[in-house]
Amino acid sequence: MACDSAKTVSLLPVDPVLEREYSLRTRHPERGGIYERQARASAELRASVSGFRTIRYGDASACLLDFLPAVKPVSDRAPLFVFIHGGYWRALERGIFTFLAKPWLDSGVHAAFIGYELAPRLSVSSIAVQVGQAMEWLRGNTQELGVDAERIVVAGHSAGAHLGACVLDGPKGWHAAGFVGVSGLYDLEPLRHTSVNADIRLDPQDARAMSPMWRDADRATRHLLAVGGAETDGFRGQSIDYAEHLRRQGCAAQVQVVPGCTHFDILDVLADPQSALFRDAHAIVGHD
Figure 1 (cartoon, helix red, strand yellow):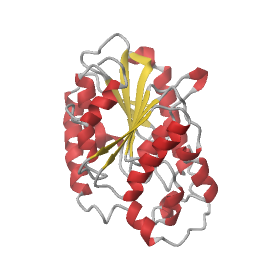
Figure 2 (tube, one colour):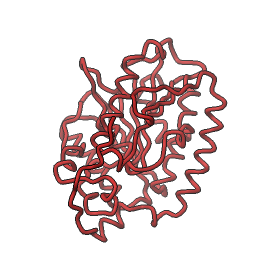
Figure 3 (cartoon, rainbow, N blue to C red):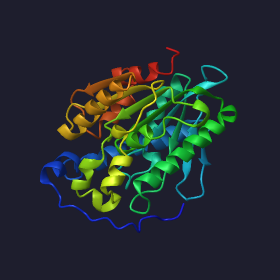
């Protein structure tokens, strides 16, 4: 996909209140150490998984996904856990987060991790198109991968949760069995008033069009929204408000506030097979 960063957007003054709620780099200086630890665990897991492979799903250099097959799948067509990384659409990469696959693989569920090009090279809408292409590739290759297309759980963290919420349905009536959004962003308008918008370049129309809060949702998909108890009011409100939006549309939507967790260490809880968050996510695939 060609670069589409040339769009001119008039940036708004930074609102100091919203900046504190959503700009997390200065608020969490420990995040670098967390990512380094998670990246080490991820590299060790990839090295240990027989059949691990990286697959190209599109033409752009970052259009890659990692597939990790379960050693003992629960059936010939096993469920699939798909994860989309965050980083405010402008940072990070899929390989940091492979560690999340371990409890899924141990329970007979395959796992896939989607990569994509970043802002400001691409707009948020174009990034969502790439992630949609990755999902299309996965749906189109379920037989080869040994995946049950009716038991795909889409998960994401932060901006990755936003992207996941944008790709939960597909052609011919397909829908994800479940969505696990961790510390997600579902209403993008507040970001227009923060320093983040210098990179993602949202105008009012983009913010509205790309916000799951203003989109219809598929009632057939079960939604689990998790957020850390130590996160900002802005991030907690995003999950709580989105769950209310989903319920108004008749969707099954559960919110889990994980005590003591920040925006960055909450993924350690999702990786813990003994945690309530993992158990609730795992229950979506329907073979507990």
